[in-house]
Length: 85
Image 1 (cartoon, rainbow, N blue to C red):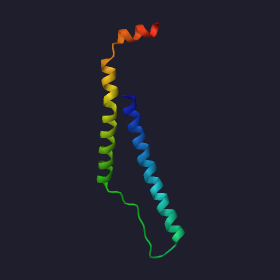
Image 2 (cartoon, rainbow, N blue to C red; image 1 turned 45 degrees about the vertical axis):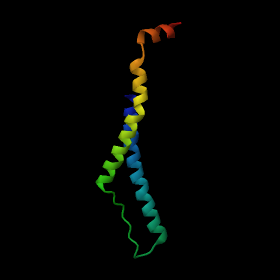
Image 3 (tube, rainbow, N blue to C red; image 1 turned 120 degrees about the vertical axis):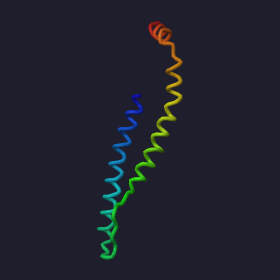
Image 4 (cartoon, helix red, strand yellow; image 1 turned 180 degrees about the vertical axis):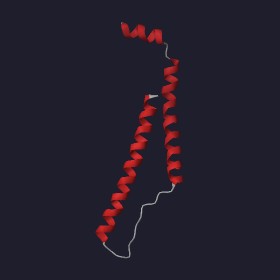
């Protein structure tokens, strides 16, 4: 559960920082070129956010399956007893 929460937080931070980086790169490029007929705007369709969210969440959940299986098969009493030795 911890890694799912951290993955979601990383996704939110990455989305915001990615948007800001793209915006600043476009602004820098338009100022560097300084052509009057060149107009660039940053437009990201909402479906793009949905697509990347679904791909990332699917990847995150699939990567958690082995860990969930391992933890569910653990015998807590046996593990604690071995750790105490």
